Length: 209
Length: 132
Image (cartoon, chains in turn orange, brown):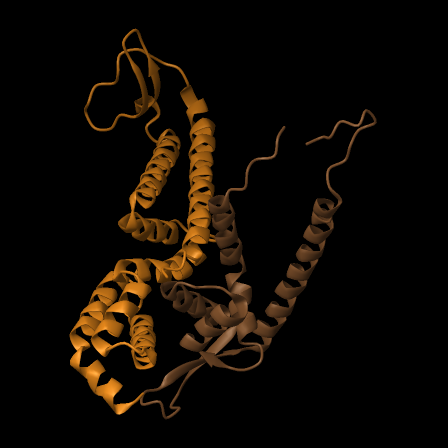
């Protein structure tokens, strides 16, 4: 870097520092040492570009920041390579939830995926809970069907049992287990597939120039 | 069925997707001869590979390739006024690059034998009607 270029860069540090600060925020939950490293990489890249540019440093800074994309986009690229990479082969609910949660922050597609994931988990878990509760609260867990009722689940506490006939008896245990497990498995597979699909899209965005 | 008129836009889009798919191999290949820093990788991809890679795309991929153990990175002071981070292929990176390169070669060969048909032109049936 020539002395002039160097001193010019120093004159325009605000835009760069501001960009890096926003990037740090956008990276959010990425672990601290990785964030520091990412920021050094990007800072070094900006310095390199500005030094190599024939236009005045101020303009060069703006150009390189534009080519990098917004801090949110850049952070999403990093996350796409890191978190989604692992989540797309993992079945761990926490990792899937985290990956989908951060994906949801970046757009509507992620938000829909998060809703599907949460709904699928809740649906599955409530069937499992129903099955598990049956042996302990035999007469308060079941499927009631009556003229105006269709209720499935457990009625705890003092609330009255639904009007209608309880149909399933102890069949609710195997049924609840099968339906519960199936919806957990299908939700996991489906959201993993969504994440994989999204990851290939994020892997390379079209060049800006 | 009639042949559709040429659609340059659709062809461009397809070409962009094709390049995206090859990006990982292109990055690994750019490091085959010597360690490079980020901007040099971008230049090699652009000048030798004709690939204009978004800058916000390159660094996240480099990070992942390193986390996967295919690359190592090291800050070096090269007298440029500030240190540069050089990326070097590891042994498993070389193995992977070889594997991907072989798969690529096979793919190109197979596509090539399909595309030979374009030189030969459409077949005609015994009545002499062209199929296209």
